[in-house]
Amino acid sequence: YKNGEKKNDAGYPEIVEEFEKNFAKYQKKKYALSTNSGTSALQAAFFAVGIKPSDEIIAPALTFHATATPIYAMNAVPILADCESDTGNIDPKSIEKNITKKTKALVITHLCGHPCEMDKILKIVKKHKIFLIEDCSHAHGSTYKGIKVGNFGDTGCFSFYPTKILGAYGDGGFIVTSNFKIYKKLKR
Image (cartoon, rainbow, N blue to C red; front, side, top):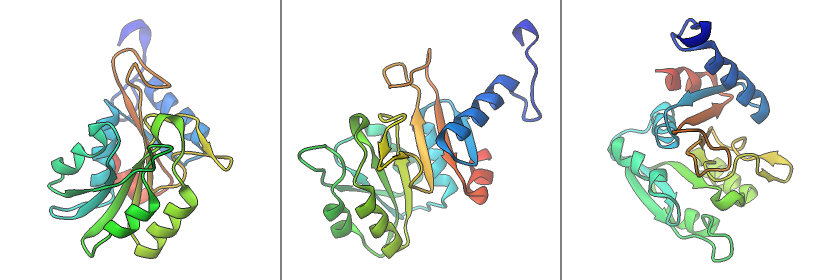
């Protein structure tokens, strides 16, 4: 490593571990894990919550394709829900209409820094006992009723692509969670 950088027990520079700890603290989550992109953060989140082939995952119809394409990598089925005309965010009414016995998760995108209607969405995921994965790639630091996005779901996924709110040179991603079982699977 350059300039005397030290490696941690996981084999990557300590500065990465420090960034993970600081990002978790900023998000008020127990755990944060860096990834090479927001897309891989989402795919890891789908893996960590136990998505299996043929499971259905509801996703917004209006989002960057990377919100839904990792679903295909899991051999699962994306079900597109309509979006609100004023915000572009996923419409809770459409989420409810699209839930079936095969639905295992919901992925939402807080589009252009505008948080989704979390009160309604949280009622839906609780009622149907499905996982909630937040795609926060467009909303670093955005809040819903004083709570940062990424704190409502089982995981919050972020992108540090150069065009994002918090961009990095090249690319990068992050996942936050407070669930230790999910975190252990994310580390794999």
